[in-house]
Length: 155
Image 1 (tube, rainbow, N blue to C red):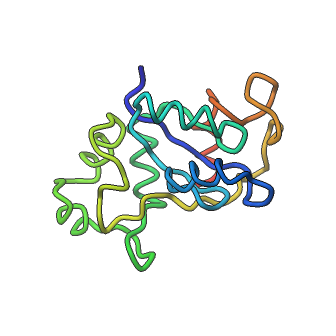
Image 2 (cartoon, helix red, strand yellow; image 1 turned 120 degrees about the horizontal axis):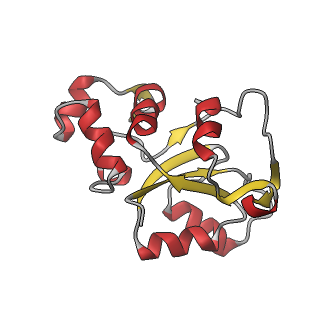
Image 3 (spheres, helix red, strand yellow; image 1 turned 30 degrees about the vertical axis):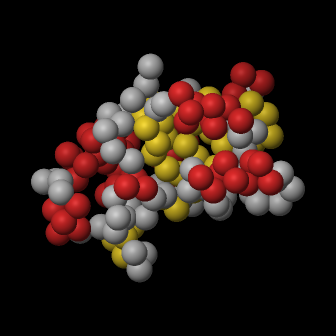
C-alpha cells in the first residue's frame, strides 16, 4: 500500500452535495485546482473513494513533493516558504520535509505556518482526457496513474 497520496480537486464548487463538500473541506480542498498530500490510511482511502467524481489522486513520490514545496508551497500571508520556516518546523532541509510528506510520516495540516494545500493553475495545453469521466472511462477523475504529469503541467 502507498505511503501518501497526492490529491487534486478537478471539479468546481457548483452543484456539489453537502456530504461531498464536507469531505472535501476535511481534506482541505475547498477550491478548484487545489492539491494536498494526505497520508494513506483506510479512512483516507474511503474518503477519496467517496468523492472520486470531484477529485483525482495518485501515490506521490519524493521529487514531485519537493517540486510542489519549492514552487507552490506557501505560508500564512501567502508568502513563499524559506529555509528558516522549514527549520522552525523542525526539519533540516526541504528534502527532509519532502521525504517525510511522501512517506506519510507527517501531513501538511500538522505543519502550522504552512498552508495545508497547494494552489495550482490550470494545466498548460489543457487536459488531454475528459474531466467528467473516471480514469478507467478515459477521463482523469478518481485514481489516476498519470496525475504526476498533469501536476507538472499545473505547477
